[in-house]
Image (cartoon, rainbow, N blue to C red; front, side):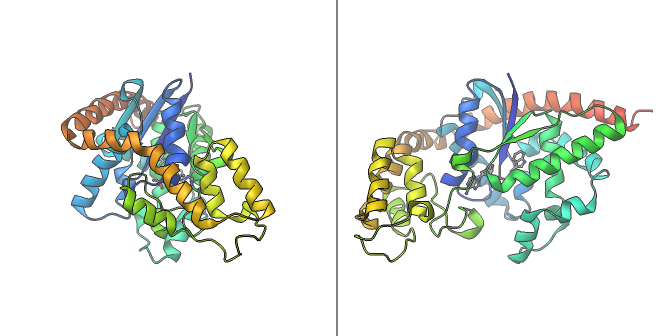
Length: 322
Ligand code: TYM
């Protein structure tokens, strides 16, 4: 059994990029591995500085995970800030983290390029993420491709720590599925809350249909052959359609006859059906927020026991016990 860990920010409506990149693999891993899943509210503070939005977002992200089928009895599921040991480890790791390592991080550079204020928190975001990963001695970290570099930073920091203070941390490995590494958004760029191009997981049918119809496609006529590899509608269909249907769609692209309007209607129906049971469960869970809080409190208690063991060892290794 491997220790598998990953987190998600409660900074907006969770979307199908989050689902295929991280949530679905995590829900599957809960069946066989020693799974750690958490809502990273401390990370979200770098972009959400509205108290009510953060509180609601955190609870809703937890509801979404449970509604999608995460079994909290078969994993450790909590909210990051409920285990404050992670903040202490962040400091302890930060003294070993070279500036250059953080300066190279794409996510930071992209955010600053988009005029997000360059706070110290935004800059040191990867160190908090390394602390998340290392505190629980994680072996495998399932993520979308955009987070690969951050997991590599965690590896670098762990190796540096082990070389300085002796074997302490497990060196984590990112796990990135080839087929879902970068789910495209409705404009063809990576689907991302910050690009405003997402298809949220939980939309009512009217809003979902509108969103799917807004997927950008080229202006080629129906009869013209098209390249499926460069079409974001095709990439999204592939996530939901059964293989026989995809073969048909593929042939239409190659030979001509692929009508984007009809394909969008198919995609809308596929997404709606796929998430229908989860939508129902989400309604039920939203009606019992105390149950969700209890699940998270139980998860935080379990997580904290592991966190304390690692932090105790780290303090000792670094000479903080005298
Ligand atoms: P976040 O909240 O941005 O995204 C959560 C997960 O969803 C994946 N993802 C995607 N995968 C494929 N295609 C997309 N378009 C897409 N968009 C998002 C992300 O790669 C991620 O796996 N820093 C992390 C959260 C975090 C974390 C951790 C992850 C904090 N601590 C420790 C792993 C381990 C983040 O912002 O993810």
